[in-house]
Length: 172
Image: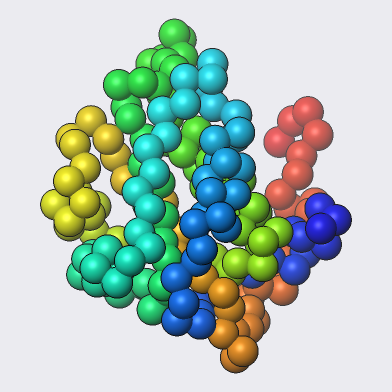
């Protein structure tokens, strides 16, 4: 798909068909995330794939924003494998995980798979449900599946602030 069309047509899907995604489609989405840039290419992302009835049932106990999606991916970052900026100690791994999530979200759209990026989840419950170690932090949840016939973007999806309010040249 043409990139401009892809980013224009993508929206947060909140209504899905009930079928789990085929592994071939999941693999394409994961490979896109694998190609995402990360700080010094350390690749601190860790991704939990949920594509069974049991794993989705566990997910549903961790968030009310699952939208009955048949498939989901929890993107985490390993803080111990993060590039660290020497000037102030800032770590890149949470940003790296966000970039990975974005690549996967766009790859899903390219495959006809709808996604919704969810941050409203209980990270403690996620850790317990999916045996996530302490040094690995859940950062983003992509619920996904084929959009239901009635799936539509929210009205806010089409509202943008003027670009002059968000882009500045040289100084504020």
